[in-house]
Image (cartoon, rainbow, N blue to C red; front, side):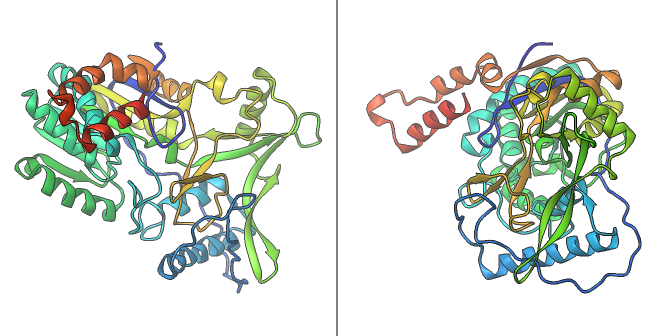
Length: 416
């Protein structure tokens, strides 16, 4: 397996290509215990994430939006008997219909949002990706499927670049669970590539079969994960971290609580194996991905011919679970600030983790795929011709270079 990296928010992205085609799964769901909802005190929201410098405060409408989601999470905790698994909290915070971060109406991408992704920085990213997928479309099927298309910028850049290469796909399918994001994508693409809009189709669930190029740019890092803690030699060495409520002045707040009772034998065994293999120290906290490998497995099972290209922040397993990485990789993004508090204004911030790319590769292998490549984003972009595209975009007369050219150069430096 060749090492390969790729870009996303200010972490270390990697790109992974799996040839063949796949099958889809919904995001992780945990059954709730039927229970009457008791009256609970309000959630107290601090002025800043716990242990962090103050952040810009959301306006009154945004705060009301967050409180509506918070009420649903509190009700879920009460119905479940006092706690819910962290994956359920993360899913609700990100994907609860109409209220979650990705399903609500707030702007998420670009300067007015919370983070900037590679396609938003420069069209050269999409043009370089077009060079990578064009041979896949010729060898398999003239279809592109993009999971989680963000603003639609990457889709537009890809279509323009493939058109210039005379490699336009017959279909460009966008798998988007958020109706709000799908509408924003539609508006953006209608303005950017109106003559190609009939080739673009929005899907709310994965088709039964896939072919061609399947793209996931910064998708895996926002899938729910288990949080666990390892306490070597303690009576309860493996602890599953769950979300509960803690009384504070004026109400309650969300807290992460260790629980050995909530730990299944399978999760316990997996954590012990990792702890022993990688010699974790005492009080080691990390994430165990379950949704992302399952999603890739589903894709791989449905992939009949073609390739899956995944671009995200992450590591191979031995780096992900390095003994020095004692606090895990969970990170939140709010107004272009990164912090580790997942309970800060739920629904208004992104919650992410790095990707264990070994688990992704294993999911592909188990479904009958092969890994075609794994490398840094910089390595992939250079190999695929980013610097050639940059040179071609340079003004013929250096004295005529304008602000846009300077921004393009800066974007390329950031991507590399």
